Image (tube, rainbow, N blue to C red):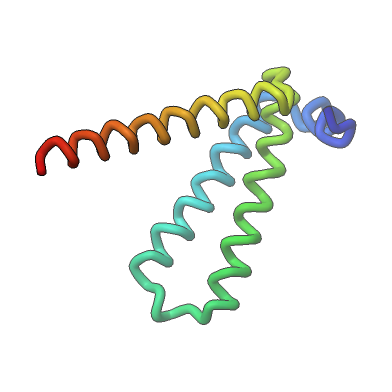
Length: 102
């Protein structure tokens, strides 16, 4: 695990970092919700920069959460692969249902 985030959690505290994670995820959600309804108010560059900024903040807090909950990258990759398999399976089932209805 990244030493920077270990020290950050020690310095700021677990509760503070969890709250910070929630705040940063909420800010990203807010930007995505706002931009989905107000796209015409942004240039592509402005929108992209704002999304990148908020995504960076969320990714940083994810690193703190990995430290707090002792989660390694392999555990996350395993969960992603499982989710990808589930999505693929759901698509195949839907395809079969659609073919059956024809």
